[in-house]
Length: 223
View 1 (cartoon, rainbow, N blue to C red):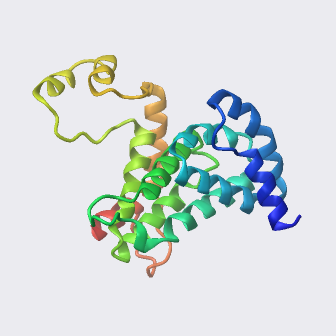
View 2 (cartoon, rainbow, N blue to C red):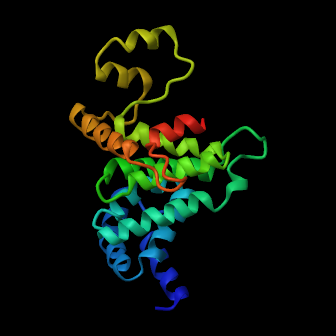
View 3 (tube, rainbow, N blue to C red):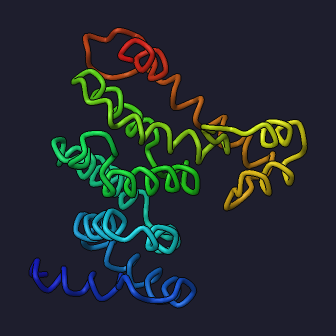
């Protein structure tokens, strides 16, 4: 299939303006069908949608629901390629804030690892963060933060008030209401996500002369 025709087809499959519930029905099966014959093109378009439209991230989670193992492998590759493709543009012009596209892709990555920890190569994404740290690219630590936050349910809190500190002594519902968490993660899902994340962190990193360090140790050394 011609690249222009394919891009037009996939762009029709993943429009950015549909309502969430309509978008799920509109995209899931057609996206899966296209992914069988052109996984790179559909994965590239999905990542482009995620980096440009934050409101598309949640519907895209359902759009890849029936991806094949090969399609998930390709999606992981394309996602890492998108994260690494614009190293100089990861910071806004003010020199402090993280670029919006990197924030969106980091959120997208974390949600993918949370919802599809089996088919998604979590270790490959963590390995990418380690490789970037070895090249003195610390902005990609945002990806690691989002993966940990999504898979474990733990949220990084800053500027916590006294009332919020007291709420931490309460139950999950009280914490959710106090900190305005968008969604609560069950204890079972939290334990499962933490176990999968720990397994990925403990895998031995490739390259670097076979140091034998896991991802966790490499991150600590690089930081």
